[in-house]
Image (cartoon, rainbow, N blue to C red; front, side, top):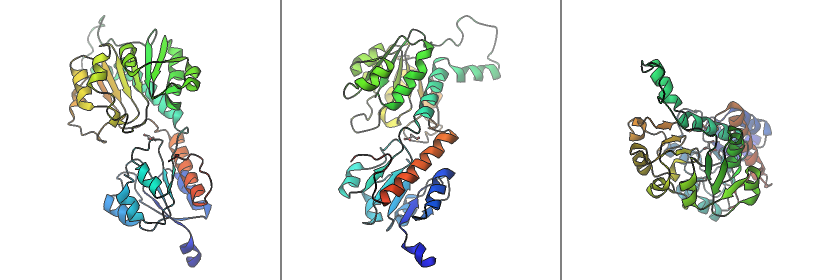
Length: 331
Ligand code: DGY
């Protein structure tokens, strides 16, 4: 048995992932795997560089940078990198492509959870729920007041989506019953099939900024979208607008956002993602009442995280067998 085991393809898993994915790897009988057995701290880089030596496949999460250094450390056996995330900005796609390594990721299974959280964050931010609970329990609750803790409502509003994909559509579907007047979106090009599902109009980035009462960022972080939400964009937004980001922190210039929020250029922001993560508690954004910050939890439901781990495990096993992955990034 010992001998048989040692001939199986070697896999390194960079995190104690949810049980479903580990079960699939274990029960496949197809691989031997080693695991960074913690979910509380990421595997230290040096340890990772050691552990990947000679592996056939790697299952990672978004805290691991998969770059030339790591791929060189892994060496020529590496055939598949499977990330338990829909985002892929932590992967050097060029380096993976050069080495003909196949890449699995986990879109779709997290769409509902992310859309749900985005709506929750939007309402929390626009209706000032964090401020409100704080006031209620710290003695700020005086008499009923006519304009106290007023926010902005979705009814009759224009909702803008920056980057229309599955998640943007799912957010709009959930917001529509709140009587949104109009959905608008921008992307590198119109996406008529998706847009028709939610009756959304394609506009320029400028128009998106100008017209949106709520602006939800749903794009991937790429060199093109890096800090696309900057002074220029915020300065075109209404001072009653609410900005929501559940994609990646890197799409926002945080200094510019701080400026826009602290000067009243825009009304409020809800962020599930920041740069860096974790955002240090001393960060100026935490001092703002009109900024709600969550610790990157958009996909954090038990069902979704298990589905992501299962999909990541299945992608990896399929890749090792030389079969098409369920969800493969085209490089
Ligand atoms: C992703 O999958 O990219 C999210 O950020 C975490 O679920």
